[in-house]
Structures are given as C-alpha cells and as structure tokens.
Image (cartoon, rainbow, N blue to C red):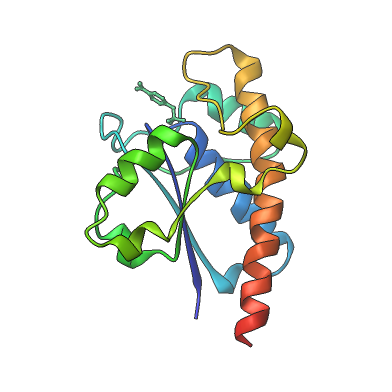
Length: 163
Ligand code: 4NP
C-alpha cells in the first residue's frame, strides 16, 4: 500500500509545491517512488491552476529542482485521499483542521516544524516567502530539505513496521 502525503500552504505556489518536489527527489533517491503518492494544495484558491511563483521556481532551479505543479485548493476529500497532511504554519493548520468532517481526520494533520532538526531552535513554522526577498525562498528550500529528510525517515520506519 502506498503512503500518500499531501503538503499544504496558503497559496500552493511557494512552500508546498517546493516541499512536494524536495520530498519527491528524496523518495526517488532512495528508490522508493513506487511506495509513495505525493501532492500539494493550498487553503486559498486564488492561484488555482497557476504554476509556482516565478521566484520560487527560479530558486528551485538554482538548487536543481524543477517545479511543474499547478496550484489547486485543499479539498475535504483530501482527508480520505491522503495518509499525512503536512502544513507549513499554524494558520494552515487551523484552516485545514476547521475543514475536517470528523475528529479522527485531524490526527492526519502534521506541521512541517515537527520534522525540523537544526531549524527547530530558531523557527516553529516555514515562513511565507511571498512578501520577502530572494533569500526567503532559499531559506524555505533549506528548511524543507532538512525537514523532508526527517519526514522520509519516519515514513520509512512506518513502511518497515508494516512489512
Ligand atoms: P505560499 O505563499 O502559501 O507559500 O504559496 C503565498 C502565496 C500567495 C499568497 C500568499 C502566500 N497570496 O497572498 O496570494
């Protein structure tokens, strides 16, 4: 059975499509592509259908990633369609949880900060780079690379437990 992971931010044009791609690359590097289904979504639908923000795509490109995801809104059916919903900040957490039809679904919602290691001391969320300069986008990539490594380790432990 595949592990289905959904990354969520506000617009689904900066942080969560980047998280999706960072996680996907790590999964590929470990030869686990068949074991995962990976997607991203936003709690705000204003950018639906758009590619990631050009500044995010440029930073991604400079770090060896190619973002092709098109923004889509988070939907209530995502609670059934995914095993883990990983949000970038507390505001995303509140918005997603408010949409949960049953309490059990809230147990599927995780914060990306749960997987921080070195960034844990300075940050308890992935900062929104939308209104920031270029360096904000590189910070997001650095944080996501660290957190996705931990997230994948945790997922691998689960896969191992299930075998
Ligand atoms: P994201 O960044 O949530 O990381 O995709 C944002 C994208 C768009 C907006 C805010 C944040 N916006 O206000 O349109």
